[in-house]
Each structure stands twice: as C-alpha cells, then as structure tokens.
Amino acid sequence: MKNKKNIELLAPAGNIDKMKTAFTYGADAVYLGLADFSLRVRINFFDTPKIRQAVKYAHERNKKVYVTINIFPHNKHFKKLPAYIKKIKEMGVDALIISDAGVVEVVKKMWAKAEIHLSTQANCINTESARFWYKSGVKRVILGREVALDDIKKIKKEIPKLELEYFVHGAMCMSYSGRCFLSQYFLGRSANLGDCVQPCRWKYNIETHNEKRFFITEEKRPNNPLEIEEDDQGSYILNSKDLCLVEHLKDLKDAGVSSFKIEGRNKSIYYLANVCGIYRDAIDCLGKNNCDFKKRVKFLKKELEEKLVNRGYTSGFLLGETADQNIEDSHVKSGWEFCGQIIGRDKKGLIKIRVHNTLKQGDVVEIVNPSYDVIKIKIGKMWKAENEEEMTEAHGGGSGHVVLLEVGEELPQGTVLRRKIN
Image (cartoon, rainbow, N blue to C red; front, side):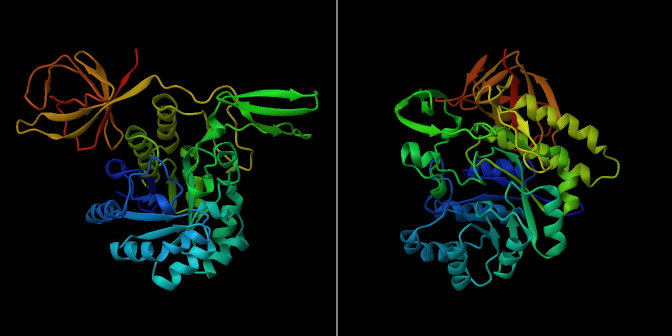
C-alpha cells in the first residue's frame, strides 16, 4: 500500500524471483533490463520472454516495470535497438530508463507515447540540465547521487511537473555517477557497457619506483599496475561506504522526490526482502499521523546495520558532505544469515520452505514479515516436503531441501527467514 503522498518505492529485479520478492515486501515498481542494453551484463537472467512474463505478473498486481536501456552505446548497438524497442512496446512496459540522447531520439521516433526516465548515468545534477531533458520529452529524471538536498528543492521548484527520482540505498561507485574506467583498464570489461567487475573492491598493494612514482597493483594481477597520483588533498581511496538514506526520507519527500530507488540488481533475495521491507515500512510511517518516524527509523537503521552484510553506511552527498569511504576492509560482516523462504503451503496447512544455508531443529529463527514485523520462533518438528519424512537438519545450496514446518502465523509466499550465526 502506498502512503497518502504517493511516494513510489522502486526496487531492482535481477530475475523473476527477485522481482516477486520485491513486490511481496512492498515495492511499487521494479527496474530490469536485457543484457545487451542494460548496465548489468553478467548475473542478468532476463531475456524478452522473461520481461514479458515480468510485465504480466506486475500489472496483475497493479505494479510497474521499468526497462533499462542505459548503456553508453556505440554505433553498432543501434543496429539491434529498433527491434528491441518494438518488442518492449508491444509488452506494455511502463517506462524506459535511458542515459544516452541518441537512444532518447530513437525511442521518440518509434514510440511517441513512451514514458522516458533519464538514467542517473546521464549525470543530471542541475536545474538547466533537468530543464533541457524535460523539454526533450523526459518525464522523470533519476538525479545523480552528487545532487545535494538544496539543489533537489531548486530543481523541483523551477520545473514542478518534472518527476524526480533519487537513490536512497545501495552501493556507491567510486566515480561520477558510475562512469568508472577501472574495470575497462584492468580486464577490458566496460562498466559503461554494463560489464563492471567491481575492481574498487579488490585488494591492492602500493609500490614505489625511484621513490617518486607510486603504483597500485591488485594481488592477483601484479603485472598490470595502475599509477596513482597525490595532490594537496591526498590520494583517492576506492571503496565507498554504502548509501543509506532511511533517516532522510521525509527531507527527500519534502524536497519533491516522488520515487525512492534501491540499488542492487545483483543482490540476493534476502537483501531485497529486508531492504524493501524496511523502506516500505519507513515510507508508510511517513503517511501515518500516529507513527513516530524518528523512533521507528532508529530501529530500522539498526536492522540494516546488523542483519545485512554492508560496507558501512553513508548519507552520500545529500547533505552537502563528501561521501564516506571504508578504508579498513571490503565490507562489514553480519551476524545473521538467510536460512529460508516460504514458497507455499501443503494440503495440511504446513508452511513449505525452500532452505538456504542450514535449518536445524532447535534453531531460533526470525521470520521477517513483509510488514516488517519480525516474528521469532523455535524450529520444532520438520519434514521433507517430497515425502513427509521427519528430519532434524536441512541444507540449501546444491541439496536444495524444501521442508515443511508448522508455524502459527498467516504468512504470505515469499516471506524470508533468518537465523543468528553461532
């Protein structure tokens, strides 16, 4: 349910199951794309039949699907583009996310009524740029992460009919709104064509030549050094903390942002369930007169810090500050792990769970309800779904156990379970 101000929660969808999980946990819309035209080449499970399936599933539930055509294309990419636009037009997708002016022009010629959202990759961070794109037929601008709150207010005041979208959670690239060249430099895989290998997360060594020149080398690629320079502000560190703006949603709403976007098409179902559930809860709290937003968000922020692997959190550039870097390690480990997802019920009313990692009799687990009411239970009797044989321990991964549990709660399909790691 949306709050009364119609703030949209927009979630990533790396595959159909992730999309369904996002919708279960309160997303109003998802974004996805075909590998050839999307900034997700690897770990992308969508083709045109699956996009059609996704649109049908979403529209049956009054949800939306936005398709990304957000690579920085060369001439060769335009050969396939018209056929692709024709197909997704026939599917009835709700909007196209585009970063390149040439692609915008092709879309406008082929699909005059298409709703166009300007990708954050286009680096729209000022009023005049936003005005240009609005006059060019863009309905919504996904602002660059570098835009501060005061500038968001100014853009909305100057162009009130332009929809504004802003990233509120997820990974931050160590570059200008994702225009990073490290992946291309080290492995010949262009981040700007959707094939980033995340070299900003690798482990590096620093070497000196004649005590005047400095190079960084990745431990597995010592023969491919990258020279670094230092100016009066110091050297630039690569590993940004993750963006987390759950505490600032009211500020963004008041500034005129109407869509809150979560990053992470490569993230897990468990990640999506928790992050979507938390931000849905926070958005709904904003729309309730009897909800103490500060108190609720304090709990939700703690959940994000403790229950999910992260790199530490930053408010990015929103408040006019420099985004924080994590210079100590690649990520912060969580003391909790994903242990299962509800996939239905059997004829007896027992809950059917697909196991992830491990589930044992006697485990105390937390069921993360889509309304983000966390329910604690102790695992009692457990049976194999295939033959109702009782078991004391079940595993995920290759064994892929599906088990039956008796839980005294009405829980929807897609609900996830987690347990504390001993």
